[in-house]
Length: 607
Image (tube, rainbow, N blue to C red):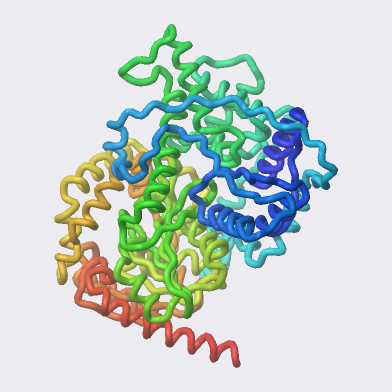
């Protein structure tokens, strides 16, 4: 991503210089650099784009506060927010939370506007050179922990697998066929074209500025027409490589360009509609688009805009039980919450189909009892974004890793329910220094002696079975949501209340939800839970609701005791979600566990 950022900055600098202006580049605290420039150019106004990202909003707030309390010789300086709305929608309070209801408003999409004319820059100011990628890496490496993000979950799992193979070879006295097969893979390297639209031969993301992206978009839209142009043929080749599921190649190719603002959602929509009209003698059919590439481009940018609006709604109109912040991860909008001012850090990770508010009675209670608490809504769930990608276990493990590194910024006690328990176990296994301890509440994941290595890098393209099964599952969940939830709360069914059901149903109509459900049919959870816990090597607590309708609790507990003998186990008279069904009992267990773990960790450090 860094190389793509530098390509975009290089193009932006050229465009600004062509207008007599320039791009200033500096390293350091954003607010300090902005204040320095304000003083040097005697700026009366500082323009910035309004954003939902918490860190961006925090910087804007700090700069705005410093500007308002600083006496400048030339007068005052103020922040001016600018917006480029996709829809001309001003009433955030009246915006529906349901995507289906929102579509019924039939809001027109705004057309892109021409770039404004900028005043000539005639101030003798140090503008800074465009940094090299080594400059940026050197600066980022000064930040602690960033090195952990350089190694993917897939690479770590492969190394772990090789160690397991060596152990088996020692036991059986011979080589393992799986290792032999995986070592026979031949990697073919090709020379990168000098005029390529892409940053690398193996990558699928467009590089460069607006003109390069628009050229790639033109090639993308014309995929069905074929081409004799080398640049468009390269785009078509990349589409074939990146089309892991229908439409996924668009995000893979243009996602970084949208993230960096090299091209806007409005521009993509405008270009796609213009091309569609050209194909149909100036008309748009009421029965849909004539080209799947047009449909994909429009659906993608409309989906992105929906999650941006939903994020604003969550910020301005807090309808849930937790105050919401937004974190942008790999260009996607992730919702999270923070509570508590002091004490040990705790991070909650929800299960399949849920969201951070599923810990509604845990987050606030733990914060009030002397803990700093984070809750995250994982990618593809709740009100977080649901991009059209192939979802798998490494993606969610890396999401948790990056959240701890970038947001929490210190080791944390990880608490997960259901599939969220498996994800935190994977994060703890792959990056043990990030987790102080693991708490697994009715966790998913197999337990047993056998570990069959599965290459996580394989594409796992959706099958016809997954396509049909996901749609039937979605229909079933919508029709039976209340009954399904109440069965998961056998001891306290009233906790499966209307608010919880309504929010689950709301999310089921979000764009992209089918891609997430298809992943259910592709889930392999390749590493048994006991292997993950062995790799983690730290303190582990199992909280098991013994009336869980989704598992055979007696057999499950027996397997845990046999293969996770160093873990602590607590049984509760509850179903699949004890943390929400019996929150007071679970909170008591969590407080006791974290207190004991903190004391034990302190003693280990002292020794």
